[in-house]
Image: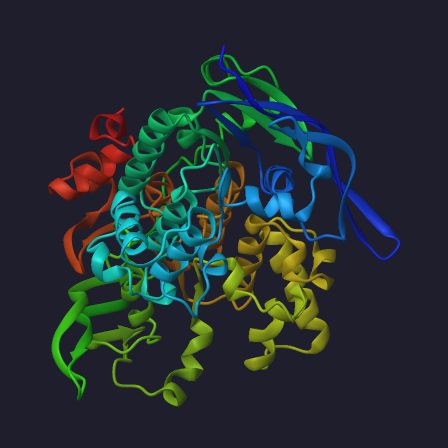
Length: 536
């Protein structure tokens, strides 16, 4: 048996607000062994991330406290360590990859400067040596043209690329323990495999231990040695990975294992197209020289055409940076584009913002990042009801009832409408974002990675919710995702995008059953959705 690197014993965490306190973690105990991977799994709000953040004392003190328990690392109880000791540990011997890269990276600094800062602080590397090491780290995590990307700012990278930068920063000092909080949430399936292979390679080379927090059981099965299943702040089952997947003993564990989104898209009748795109292009100019002349273009979307009938779902898949989200924003006229776009028979490509505003009620969007898309200054009720107020729909009482109904539809307690986004887990925040889009009962919803922050049980619920709403209100979805299991469960049509161009498209069941393009085959194999598996 490997040597124990860290011991957690009877850990408890309480959050307080005024005179009220709530215990969110209770009697959690586990061991992390050198060179092995321990996975903490469970639904959003189960206490996984709170437990992990306790190790590096990253909770919002003093509103959070540890009424009981120990976290022993290298013979020292970290809950009693000084702040100076913790600063020496953080990012050096113990590193962390956070769930939301956009809120973890400094938007004012280049990614290279942020990686070099870690190297300078703990290793004393500066100048050319630090720059070369930063470029090497970006190359290790699969960032294309790392020597150029080293000068990029976070907003210039895709969601998946930002997450890879976070992983590069965490691995910069070759830590003994890497805490990975949903490390592949924003990544497509092919990059997930590359990241997993990278983590395994570094783990074997450095003898590094990994504490993995994830709701993706496919990910856990591929990388973990031991698994702890958490529910409502407690560990309900703990076993080796092989034993847990072969013979789970707790009912909650069995529920998680059976929660893979499945089923077929909503049955539809022939209908006229709601959305028609013809040769849609989004080209970003590359400017160089003293006078910033345009010398070339980044062809983020290049010549995309399709027709989407009312009441159907178009699944758009591809790797991070392939142009999926850019295409979706262009179709809703949230980005400038060239080509023809018709919505419900009306050409909208030439419309200004004032002209298209009356149509906004019919075109809603759920963004990928629930942290950045929800205002921290507004209550949940105000966020969901904002569209109702802007479009002057109903009386104040009717608006309040619509907010209650929307929260109920997405599986949240209507009483939560009086709380603020920071009081919710990542998965709960995404459900709030979905409720905000649903409350207006639009004709078209752009869903940009709507389930990426959700655990599998909630994903299944959201898939069922989206199906039911589609059947009830004849909704049309543009569904952008790297999770092919969810795409397969919802989509009538499938579009595969690579480097801004469509490499394959057609009825979803036909593409899943018999992919024609090598890139499509690669995506399906990476997600373990082989054609043979779809035919059974």
